[in-house]
Image (cartoon, rainbow, N blue to C red):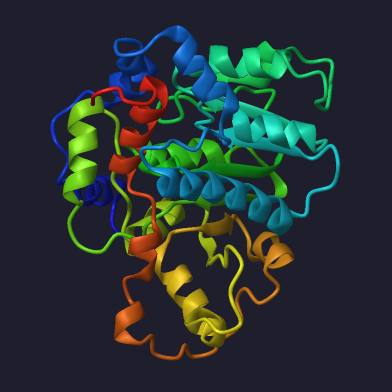
Amino acid sequence: MRTKAELLAELNQDLPDRDWRRGAQDYLKFFFEKYSQGQIEEFVFTRPLGQITPEDPVGAITETAGYLHNFASSIQLLQLKRGARVLDVACGGGWFAHWMRKLGYDAYGMDISSDFIAMARQRLQADPYVFRTTESPESIFRVQDFETDRLPDDLRGSFDAIVLESCLHHFFDPVAAMTHIAEGLAPGGVVLVLEGENRQGPIRDEYMQVMLETATLERPYPRILLRELLEHAGLPHVEFLGALKGYFAESAWVSQHMTLHLADSIAGSNICVCGRDAASVQRLVPSYGLAPVPAAPVPAPRRNLSQRVALSLAWRLRTLCLKLAGPGAPL
């Protein structure tokens, strides 16, 4: 296995020169300069739900459905008992941890942005129907730089599940971040990574444009590099997952070729569950470690399905601006 320095050099070789740490800390300030506090709070507090914009209704529906599918699939996969401890990494406005609390889990959220954490605390405090403990919103949602700092002593080694929902690609040093994150696992605990694209080739132009505009990292990982960084972080046992989302007509091609559709979903994204030992992964995926069944070849017309379905982060930024600006606002 290569050294961490060699791996990071390859991961970051195509990135523009930016202060990525400051960009992540000031992410909301980028929007504060364009929109009012009230507009931004409305967007953050209603996520993952959001108004279907007249400018791009299909895109808005796709984005919302994607978040909801990810959440539902995550809780179904993890099969956690009530009261289990869960960490939402880079939680943003805290919707994932908030909803986990509503299900009865002892969920926490951490983010490098103090603006996001303030909103996450406000969101939690405003909801009377969440799983209550003696802890305050300040203890439940905390500012944390995962790349530079270990978890607080009271949380280290305590989590049954740690979830990274669309955030791993934001770390400039994902090896350090994942090493610190893995320290939070209780015995038998797992890390669930939800990453939208298994990158093939160079970083796409739309991602580059978002990074240049916001100074926030938006570069997906090639799977071979993701496996390597997880191994460096002490999480060598990894199972990649696919998702079948939505309803399918009996007459549709996808219904008649579901195995190929699922294989394409697994190959196209970097959704995975990982752990320190094989048993923790086998608890959720009993087939882990068994010889895989040889996959049937995917017909050429379907090879780019995942990339067509995957949400472009550049589009997400545009959608956010449209939602905040309201109908008819110029961008």
